Image (cartoon, rainbow, N blue to C red):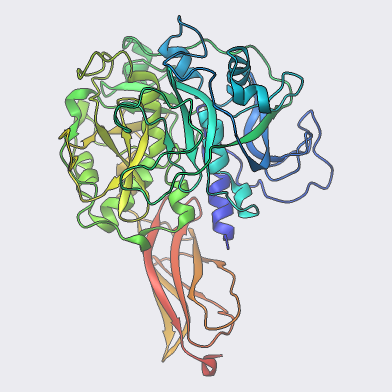
Length: 543
């Protein structure tokens, strides 16, 4: 059963290219007043005006609208994505990489679906007639659905699902809802594959336990009406020297040279609390052949909810601090010791943060050469996002596919023999050149928890903190490991750090005899995470 923490974490994610935050106050309940087509009274989890479930809120009106709703039951496609199995683009012979990258974005699903219809796509013509406003979601819209908190109440289907985004001619993005991986299978992932748009089933991937299954789709619609036209397709073709940005950390645009000599790849907006601008380091500051973790983190390192949150834009610095403080990650240690460009606030980017660098910079590569902008290699780059304790998310900079790789590896174990790579990132506030908001912020902060015990009886959770101010609220999630009888819901409890940096939380562990519980604590913004602790409640005589 999903916990309240899972809901809170998922609702605070920054999802998609727009980078807007879904309010933590959003909740999954029926609205007192029905949500309508203007967006009035609408919240994530509500029934939308089209009868679907609202799963995404951009926070304000965008060019495409504000909300996305979905018919939550997947539909078996029973039709190929494209009418042609050859390497032909749905956008025609004159298609550009910029158009294909734009097709991935939040807001592009309807435009993509119309392009599919016009290109004679059997899937689009079968499931998305021009007379209705439901569409096949884009890559980022589909990923937002996978990460959505609506799956606290709806079972996430374990099937492969098409997006409407084209990666390159003959290849479309799809997502395994078993674990969230988004594939195209191009660039040698499936050897000698010339196209995937004729798939009727997902393929069997090397190292995966997921068997081939029929391809599926979701129907999505946006509302209310948007505020403008489709934005122009855009890639960074040259790094621009904008003195406001490089010298004063102001008025930065994607593609500008940053204060540390890197490249601006994301603007979180003026209201961001995690730093507005994201700067990826130059190629001269790249690291090679370093493991993510030695040993691997272990399955108990994070809860599933915190793994989900750890993929988002804004999570990289906090992820890095946890990895360095709790697991002594070699990859993060290299980044933490970097003085690239005279700055010491670099971190290992999260899965979604690194994807922004790929989105705008990794293009126009000739053969095995570095990309013309940013100097990215063709191989795998580590992110700071844990997958399952044994593997971590990486990004393949040949075409942007993101895979989990074994944390203890320093490179491919099979040909071609390429080392795993690390490209640091930093984030900074508007007008704040000197002190970026990066890994350094979190290194002096920690939480260590243990069971609060009275003789043989466990009475709650005790914690010792460093770097947290007195009065800081700490949230603890307590989850049953093995229930001796009946069912037990997760509990979310809170305590307050005292003047000595400690807290104690007495817990009414509802009485099951010889019950095992696991506990993980965090600050309420989830940026400082504790160790994992096992709690044993010993018998009826403790109550």
